[in-house]
Amino acid sequence: MQSSKPTHVRYLILLMLFLVTTINYADRATIAIAGSSLQKDLGIDAVTLGYIFSAFGWAYVAGQIPGGWLLDRFGSKKVYALSIFTWSLFTVLQGFVGEFGMSTAIVALFMLRFLVGLAEAPSFPGNARIVAAWFPTAERGTASAIFNSAQYFATVLFAPLMGWIVYSFGWEHVFIVMGILGIIFSLVWLKVIYSPREHPRINEAEFKHIAENGGMVDIDQKGKKSDGPKWDYIRQLLTNRMMLGVYLGQYCINGITYFFLTWFPVYLVQERGMTILKAGFIASLPAICGFIGGVLGGVISDYLLRKGHSLTFARKAPIIAGLLVSSSIVACNYVEVEWMVVGFMALAFFGKGVGALGWAVVSDTSPKQIAGLSGGLFNTFGNIASITTPIVIGYIISSTGSFKWALVFVGANALVAVFSYLVIVGPIKRVVLKEPPANGGVEASGKLSQAHS
Image 1 (cartoon, one colour):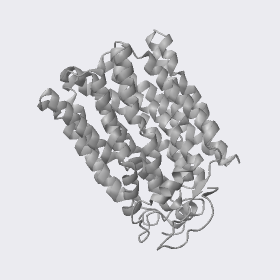
Image 2 (image 1 turned 180 degrees about the vertical axis):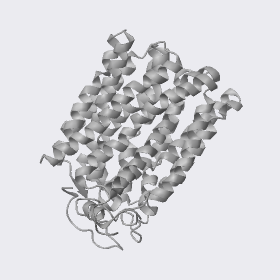
Image 3 (image 1 turned 90 degrees about the vertical axis):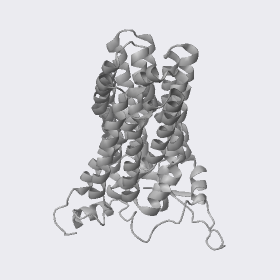
Image 4 (image 1 turned 180 degrees about the horizontal axis):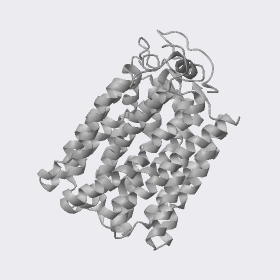
């Protein structure tokens, strides 16, 4: 590292996080775009489709704590590269389930979605860990918002493409194309990603800027690997009111996300009578607004921080305002004109984007010893919604014959998240853990404390 004008290698790292998260969410959304055609071909009902949608979530949730530990143990670069390659391979294989009989195809599809979820488990804890290492505190909100906004960009970029592929070639080809793209990207990842101290293109000025302003530059330093999941650390996080409020908020925010990732294209086809080709393009419009809102939320949060507002206010204000706007999704039940339906969906997704600052909060609050594990725990709670949301909506549609109460359910999630951040979370601070007693030693006294980030 030579001392001179600061380099901007951290922006290259952020670009890689943005691209990998775009591929990540596109691979999650393949099943939604293919869903209506797949449902017809395999002869499955709404409840069965809901369970297939949820298969990803069961494994994704189960893999969060092990995935976070793997990141802390072996570092972000290797674990994440393996994760990308593996989930992409399982995505490709989904394109071949149609070769089996109906019942076998359903089981195979469920299992492959399950394996995609397991392989993707380290991805978002990895993102939060890399952002914590590469970005100073006052840049972290924007960086987290940018990688998080890739979920909307994935829909903007790939929903029309995937809709066209399904329309022109059949649903099987969506999985094959997207999986191959991910396999190629896993090789690019290995060439570009390093820790700040080891990156060949960073200079001393940029390294000092990161290190002196809150960046956790030695998070992957050799010789500082954890031996295994620190269950006492997890217990301390689970008894911390602030973290529990953040976990509840993320669960509700993800409830909104997983409506859009699973049932939204089906809603457009079955409730609003669109073709899958049109639905693919229409689904991209709310996603554009979500992308804009997602970036804007992080920019506003960091702007408030630079203007001298507290970390608590700077993070909470966009979250609460955005989620209140997101509850407007319920208005779709009261309009018939197509452009108004799309308009309210776009407004709801914009608000959800502004409010989706949970990963910035995780980077601000994660204990330094277990940044990966803390992100994994946060994502465990958040992604329980990836299991419950598709199933609950499947049962609502099956029992009522329409999406009206499903949209009420999605809107209610936004309001519960607002309550959590207003009432439960309290001040947002870095969690400082007590070290568990070693070798039978006496445990240090004192309660779990928090220190400002």
